[in-house]
Amino acid sequence: MATGDRPGVSGELTGVGIVSGTSPTIAIGRAHLLAPSELEARHYAIERKDVLHEVARLNNAFSLVRAEIDELARHVAADAPGEVRAFLDLHRMILDDPLLCDEPRDLVRSRLINAEWALTIQLEAVCKQFEAIDDEYFRSRSQDVRQVVERVMKALLSGSNTTVALPPKPADGERLVLIARDLSPTDMLHLKERAEVDVAGFVTELGGRTSHTAIMARSLGLPAVLGVASAREAVAEGDLVVLDAEAGRVRIQPETADLAQYRQRLRAQVESRIALRKLKSRLPRTKDGIAIDLMANIELPEDARDALDAGADGIGLFRTEFLFMNRDQLPDEDEQYEAYAKVARAMKGKPVVIRTLDIGADKVLSEKARRSLGIAAGAPTVESNPALGLRAIRYCLAYPELFLTQLRAILRASSVGTVRILVPMLAHVHEVEQTLSFVARAREQLKERKAKYDARVPVGGMIEVPAAALSLPAFVRRLKFLSIGTNDLIQYTLAIDRADASVAHLYDHLHPAVLQLIARTIRVGGRARMPVAVCGEMAGELDLTELLLGMGLRQFSMHPAQVLSVKERLFTLSTKAAAKFAARVLRADDPLQIRKLIEKSAARPAL
Ligand code: PEP
Ligand code: MG
Image 1 (cartoon, rainbow, N blue to C red):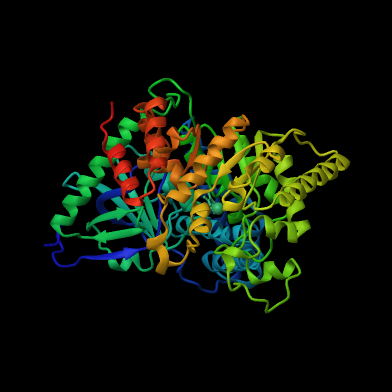
Image 2 (tube, helix red, strand yellow; image 1 turned 60 degrees about the vertical axis):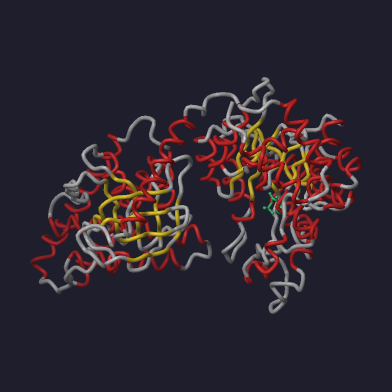
């Protein structure tokens, strides 16, 4: 049976789930639909005698919205995330831009049209300019312009306050899930800051992973599902909805049994997160007092917040390729510098390991971007064996300007934090040597320009190709640290394309060959007193913490959401017992026996 007041009207919607740090990924509450766009205002011609009146209405509306944003800015909590202030500043800037506040006045005068019409014309003109920009980030900023204009339009229509109306409190004490076409950062902040409104999460029809709405959701710690087409048609005011941000799913009026399960999952998440959060400020150590570094893997500069929120000891892997994908023009040195420096600054001296571009295989550049590198139009985007093709360091060495630009940007970021360079997919020693000479060249270029950088930025290598794991000493001699990319090490050891679902069942991280290569890398690195980390998914799997610790691993890098759970597990483990356990696993050559040993270790109760 469906729950709530609309029996039978149940369903499921999907979108892009936004999970923030250690906050719960599930939200349950009554839907509150926010008013649709107010941009469809009446358009009409005016007489010359009415010009002054219309211009005054415009002035009044702009002043009202300015005052509201300033008021919100005054009330932003002192410890609010930096993004919150940044959004208010951005919206204030848009509001003050002459293109938006002066041009509509001129349109009223010259075309004799009402204020709403003039504002709509100008909005479309400005948005067109944004949308023509060859850069996804700037293109998506047209959304901010629309949000600001929508506010001005509301002020024009009502002649007063434009902040979203406070929703009524559900009678049954449930929290609220906001459903909107789009939710501007200012509206979100307004609702979040009001104690009487208990927002559990939100769903929007617009927005994606990098939209401002997503960034705000993360910094406010609210689960969200964005880009849900027709959400406001499918959900009715007051419906009970379950938002599963991990799965990017919205359940409307779920069956009673399903709802009970979701409530149970949410309770468990809240309880475990409360317990885990208490560990945030405790240093990660084993039961026998050995210090461990727990680092975070990130993909976008904004993710650094999640890393800090989880109390990570640094960024162990910044996958920079996401700055290069889904766009037609590659990021130049300054844009890259800003992104890397943002993370370096945010981490306040904690190490930030920036991986050089790992493009190729399943991560491809757009056709236009490839052409800008000199790749002929029509050249195949996907080679016959992409995972074995021109990927990662091979790609960078093939396009020296692309590589040098990135190296200069990374080196410059070292002037504002603790930065390390990590090179992916090394198989040959000559690739290390070529990389080091590129780094030296990038340094020279910066020196000539008198640009600031730290001359001692260490260069490390990813061990993710068996050839490198089996010929380590030559790599160890030339590099300053190693990071084991288990995701690819499994792929290349077992000859399983990690993106091919038809062979996914053969992708086995417990295959004895994989375990031997990991153990060997940790051992050889350790003997040379070289820091060795694991940054593949295995580092965040609780079942494997004891095994990796027992192999001698002292640096784990994982998704921010896993950091506190792994820390909790480490407190229960002793390095001596773990070493014995790892030795037993490594002696076993039967995958079934290995699996049983791991299951036994995972089931051991916390001490
Ligand atoms: C890996 O291969 O384990 C790794 C961390 O890199 P990616 O998953 O980005 O290939
Ligand atoms: Mg990899």
